[in-house]
Image 1 (tube, one colour):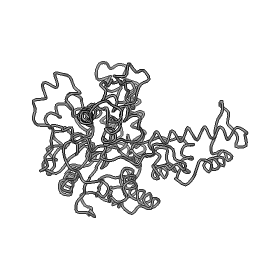
Image 2 (spheres, helix red, strand yellow):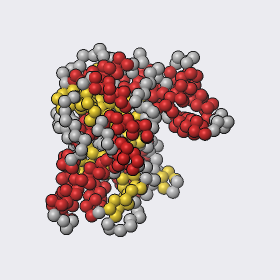
Image 3 (cartoon, one colour):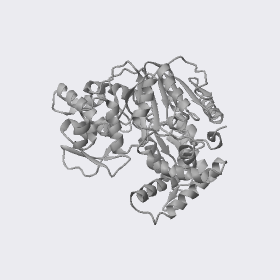
Image 4 (tube, helix red, strand yellow):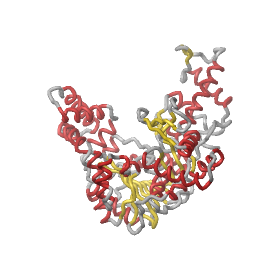
Amino acid sequence: MTTYDDIPYPSYGYPQATPSAMSAIGQVFSLSPAGIEKATVLEIGCASGGNIIPLAVQYPDATFVGVDLSENQIAQANALVAKLNLTNVTFIAGSIDEVEFPHETYDYIMAHGVFSWVPSFVQDAILKICGERLSDNGLAYLSYNTLPGWNAVKTVRDMMLYHGQRFSDPAKKVREARQMLKFVADNLGSSSGAYKTLLEQEVKTLQNADDNYLLHDHLEAINEPCYFHEFMSRANEAGLSYVGDSELPSMYLGNHSDKVKKTLAPMTNVIEQEQYLDFISNRRFRMTVLTRKGHEIKRSISSEVVKKLCLIPLFGITPDQPNDQELRIKRLKEPELIATISGEVAVGAYKEIINAFPKMLSFDQVFSRLEKKLDKSSEEIERDLSNLVVRFLFSGLLAARADAAPIASEVNEKPEVFSYARLQAEKQDVVTNLKHDQIKLKVDQRILLQYLDGKNDAERIRKELLKHIASGELNLNKNGDVVAADSPEIDTILKTYLDAQFGFFLRNSLLIEN
């Protein structure tokens, strides 16, 4: 038994820990990763399958294997697989240094949130598996806590561990850890300076964290952050080379001050350069993509490599637009972050990418649309666009994937929500969409979701929801008052409600093309 059996860690999808995201990183640095449609994929520390089961649904001809030490979570994963009638995914309970893997090699290996929380010999086993079992063009993704950023977190972790050492029950450990955090927060008044600021920030963050996160990320017996150069030294010994970070902007010197650029640009060793960037940014977490030694990894990015990628906007258009030659945009997840794009091709391209949302556009699709609208030669548009996409990726305006998920661009006559999300919604309020992001649903949305299986039109869905309204399971309101199922206004209100919810599911990449 493990603490993961007592208090299971939520098993979610992680957008960076997917073959499509990994392949895109590999392609940016001129590698030729395996095609995803028929790839073999291994996940180490798969929990109850929240990351690879939705991938297995999306790629029925690919083969997936998940390994986890928790027998309970593996049993949950197998139950989900049975409900979805999947035959392309296998789960194994056991320690990765002991299990027998069903395939000799894997095109993609992922281990998210595992490396820092296991003993050194298991870390060695993870790196050895990656070094020995990656296919010729295979890619591995490992995430881990890093120094110097984790020094601040370690202070708070040490406090909680010291206080919790007398408690053996995991649930009580978490409760007592919260009491310790409250004690610290309530008595910081006499402290001052950087120490107080540091503690206040970390305590506030952890006070709002879920129990399972607090237990598994901060109260586990093992949580060993490392410096990036230390991690890469061990990876090199295992026969692995550094491809890049899943967050491309973190690698770009252009995102830093002129002094930083001038000092670090002459460095030819990318590991040294990135270690110095970690020192400057106080980095605390990394998502590293690796490959087997022997591949030529080009650090001088060619604009040609982006022409095979699909593009995701990370910004949206602001209401206040200065003129036709400039585009003001705001970060979708941090709306206070504003950027301005200028230039005919740049503005036109970003508008096309945003207007296609939630669908992903390929480079060729963006180029084709611009070619029809701009009074420029095809050669000039293609050249400018390819250079711009590289710049947008490394400046954080765009994310890239190797292929486009089958996301609907409009609400079909018989709307269909991603089957894995429908299954999740039966028991939880957070579901995985077609981009592998997590979407939080309300109770009424979870009820509605069950009828969006591609078999029911709006009229049939309306009739089914009326039953839920009549039973009191679903309440619709007008001016703060609950509308009864036999109200003369119910049809109008229900239609407005359905239109709004269909729009929500569409915008959040839950509706699948059918």
